[in-house]
Image (cartoon, rainbow, N blue to C red):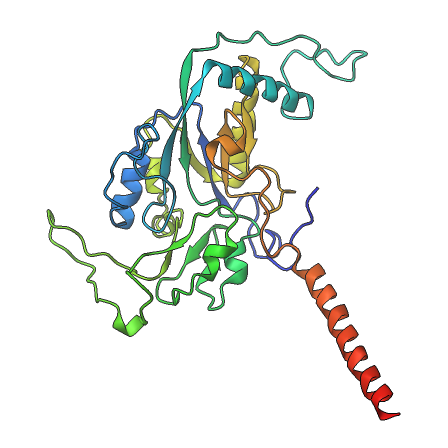
Length: 338
């Protein structure tokens, strides 16, 4: 079990719980890679174009990764028959180690372990794993911990949002995120706030919208402005397959567990949850994913940890080290005075 971060907030300390906290559940098993979520996110938040949209050489993924201009990113991960089979074999081991179990366990004389092997579906020759990635809105958010200006704050929905008018573009939060989802919006170099090009809120339909928040840290807000008026995030509203679901954390966690159990019953032993463990290095996340292979395959860290998790222990060591230096200096004066 990871050491929990004792210097950051926990749900019970910041005024929200599993019923109040909002969350995503992204079911990659039914994502068709249409990128509707990407488009909706960009249009609603008026995020600028990310690069020249040239083919990246990674199938149909032409945005590459999350960043200041791309808050939802759909990756296309190609897998061969051998890779699919390997994922299923590894998934069977995870089921044995405590993932949601297969239905039909007798529980009589066997400790509740199902001795019946699931009927595995036919393994296709090829498949795409569609991964619609987004900010994780961690329970213990590294970006929030290290922000020196207070520009990042925890909302009443349990999400982490950047205050554009407070952020000074220092970029400290970029290093504090274990998932690499936050970046400073490129401005061609570091500029003082009063030297940045002024941009308007209004623009003419059909013309290129002005780029806003240049030089400021940017990431997914879970559409905080829409939440304030009772609307769900644009990506979840747009998703045609219900791959992206939105609701309270309690609802999303229950839906995720039910879905992975359903897939296991169908023989898809590779199905597993990511971000649903409140004892991991970030205290669990507000974006729960159902994956069909190891997290590394999707470009996700297998064991994320907020960089500030060990600060209390580090502080203790620093105090001991400082005390040692003071003691050594005092001893030197005493010895030198004799």
